Image (cartoon, rainbow, N blue to C red; front, side, top):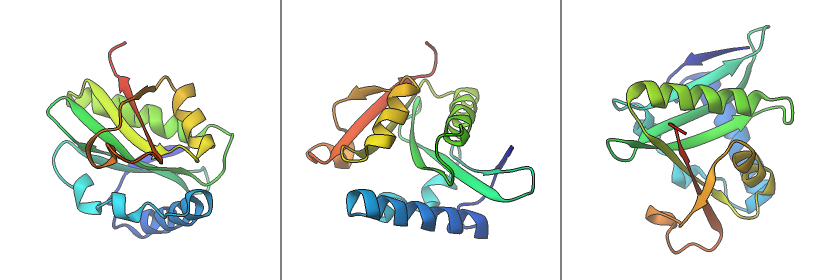
Length: 150
């Protein structure tokens, strides 16, 4: 597998994010599209990546966008095939790149009902925090943070 920096407007990115949106709609009743602006990951100190398998097929994606000078937010994490480690590899790549850019921590939001995502982030050492930003008063949301220097 290789992970490549891409534009969120790339054809593979659009395909993966469409699959993610359909999956989220099935799980949560909402596609998550309202929580992602592709332009947010085209600014300095942001990143959008696509994972490709050995045959060149796009198999997952992930991104982060700046929140503050030292904190970024993980967005659009998706792996086409679950339980084989694609998501973890993408997430670790994002963490490394965020650290290299100078971020100290990553934040993210998912839905309480999305048990697989909640368990995935907990397994990857993300700690539940008070809901932040637009998620602050949303009881359906659950937010996490990871310190990149622990």
